[in-house]
Image 1 (cartoon, helix red, strand yellow):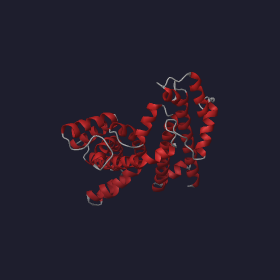
Image 2 (cartoon, helix red, strand yellow):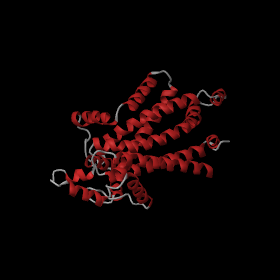
Image 3 (cartoon, one colour):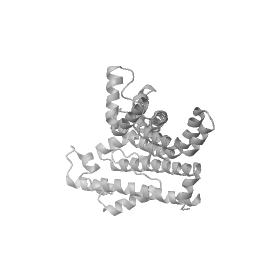
Image 4 (cartoon, rainbow, N blue to C red):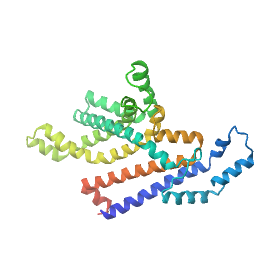
Length: 311
């Protein structure tokens, strides 16, 4: 287990470093920066702009800026917002609970719908419910989040008036964003659980249980489902991480508070420290979730642990 933790930890560090380097590189080579945004319309000359860039360290070569930023991150300093001089980490922590609430509620919807339809689809293979579940999975995977959100706003806010379309106050404002984001995750989970369940119910041990006269309900839900969910566990963990990233788009569509709104506003104002900080913070959460899922998967199924350790 120690070897597994070390291997996964090293992989996680490479992923975090790669994501940080990529985002920093993209921000660095943009044709304009936050100084241009700050001085836009002020009539400031080039000398003032250059002086401000020097004060902010934006005049340094790429490698110096990157190493300085990396050193700051290792000391827990995510930098300051160029626009309002607020610590980036404070901005993130102020809005992160709203994003976590959206992610958890959408994950609950995704797991409930995905597992339920996936199991029913496998049990009633090639039936009407199977076709419905497969269509739900197809639409969930292929339909962009912002488009699903717009359709829900048109249906349940404009035409029916059941739920508000914007804001972050109260349970009712959480319903449409959670369904929007949860529908995407449900599409993946339906397909994963369905395929896994179809594979398990044709295994010899399931046929043996049936031949012994064990009730079909126990065979399916106590034995088959338990084994079918083991390989689905890893993908569900990854999907939950994807939902955290998808919350950025969803919060923008529904004008909700959260880190999605922070990064959207930061991109518009070219506040690069905030963009980098949010991306890196989200990457830490995503990698941590996957690490936990990988370890849990190995503990549940010893065969995976042996294969990962090469023996």
